[in-house]
Length: 344
Ligand code: NAD
Ligand code: UD1
Image 1 (cartoon, rainbow, N blue to C red):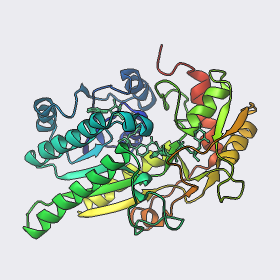
Image 2: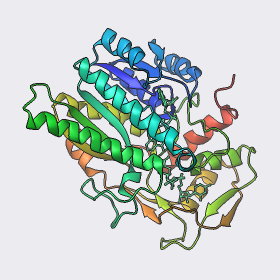
Image 3: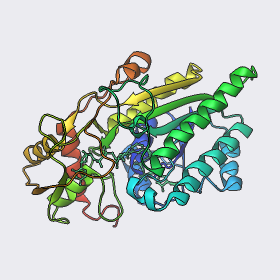
Image 4: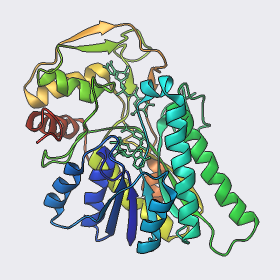
């Protein structure tokens, strides 16, 4: 299939391009490079041995995005483009709503005008808020999002569901097919160690912080709270290898091909690890020390969040193959080989 990948130069997008090409799909990437580097795409080309048509386009720029969409006649769009830093979104709400909401609205309109009404959207487990029960199934009601970033995901899910519903109600002969993928906590990197997550400034997320401590860029990890109601008192999350996550997108094309209407899938492993579990696994697998200190709880954090990923297995035949050992090994290989990210 010919696929438009928005945000394809970013962390998850670049890994997904590899898996799409490996599965024989034709990929075109658009990205404004606000949080990524074209070097990532060059490295992907090296891994796959295939060229990636790339357009430096902001998805809010209707004319430019229309030109690309019109030219290629895509079968589906996989939509990663967006701003994603939770903390930053609290201080820059307008920028987050403008980029994520306006960008997606323009994109949806352009896709519709060009008769490409098939989209796979990067959502997040953050839409569940503080879950009433774990493991979380897709049936679990959405919860309160405590930050503008999370709000954009929740709102965009609603926009797309409403658009699809309108098509059904009006018996549109070419209705939208929409797959909403709720990612749990993606970590890890491609096994080549040439692409990976490259956060700006001091990382907010656990694994990038750990790898930067291990490589000597940061002194020690702060663990946010040790008095949660979890087995060791630290927060429990469902970490998922980014390559497994990428493959989840390839499998989601099956739902699109089967004209799914709206489908929501959790992409996680179903296994929860605590912060201390991750630190220990990282140290053991990589033979490096990660000094840490216990700090106060971080505002907005929850105790436990992990998925029930069985729907994706039943309907798409997808399940995560990698475990915490591979996640720690590949995160470290990327960081160790590229202490300054994509700077060459
Ligand atoms: P990323 O920042 O590495 O990738 C996003 C890409 O989108 C970047 O390359 C950026 O330059 C591009 N972009 C942003 N705004 C754009 C615009 N207006 N026009 C064109 N390109 C634009 O982030 P990621 O970790 O790869 O995340 C991809 C998607 O998955 C995002 O939508 C994110 O919110 C979502 N998500 C990520 C996580 C995670 O933990 N990484 C978890 C849940 C959901
Ligand atoms: C965060 C976001 C979530 C987003 C996800 C992926 C918050 C509240 N949630 O999830 O919306 O979808 O990232 O981008 O920001 N931790 C430490 N020390 C650190 C960093 C993290 O102890 O320096 C702990 C956290 O308290 C948590 C766990 O590690 O228990 C994972 O944290 P993180 O990687 O930031 O992911 P989430 O908070 O789950």
